[in-house]
Length: 400
Ligand SMILES: *Cc1c(COP(=O)(O)O)cnc(C)c1O
Image (cartoon, rainbow, N blue to C red):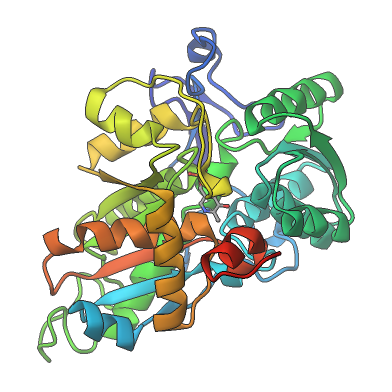
């Protein structure tokens, strides 16, 4: 198979090589206070062998020795019974090495850096992408420099330093950190892992979709899609979910998840796309609003869910395009819903997730009445609850 970058907006293609981030033509149209223009997708053509578990643009041998992904898909019996949804599943990405979904992207970026002998990776982050790149970079032997708002939860900043990365605390928002980190990588030529800006951050995040389809196939395939002994999944071993709930800030995870299901469909491993839901916090809901109105208007963000708090969603145009192509939906919840859902999930399932992830669960709870009770529903739990103790402590009445 052959890999290349393609601009989803204009169709222009580029080789996948160091120094290439955005589409030159479309990025030239960039205006301030809007999502990035010219975000590229990883595209492939040619044959994919049946042995390839997930087609990725970097060869296996370059991936660093750290167990990213292959996270568990929980079957929460108590919750299923309580909610009347016997096929509810929880994708537990809190189990990644640094405790968040971001490791999937960092892993691919680290593999790319190793392939091309790149010594240093730089990025801006609200905390998780930085702690993730620091973690995976430590395993890969790559120097990591991160720009993070001073206000990032302490656990995430501690992680960054524990893993030996260089931490630049920015006196301002994530958006300022983004600009500062880009200025640094442009000046030094170091590899940027800024989310959406580096197309590998999107592609790396598709791996969870492959795991979900495979694990659903394993769990349900033998019994058939609706519990009948005779039914067979489209390809033995794989099954598409009906709904997937994704906590959404910049829109990179959701775009990656959709990319994964697109690949699975193209490879004939599943027979239809799931409905992918962007779950957003009321105080940071740009993608949900744009799905309705078609335009992105900047609005200062404010939510307890720091990992999905963005003024301008960097991957907004790409994510919106993908959501529209596949009839994606959006659901918006407030901070009270998020904290209540976080606690409810913890005490009914045993899974303690950070507020951003709880947003996906809260979004699911909000619309569950609209879902077919027999639907296969997957909620993506993207970050560990221990990453942000302050808000969780508030919800259980502890002073910290
Ligand atoms: C980054 C992050 C998200 C949101 O991902 P986007 O790509 O910004 O939409 C959700 N949950 C967690 C835990 C994250 O770290």
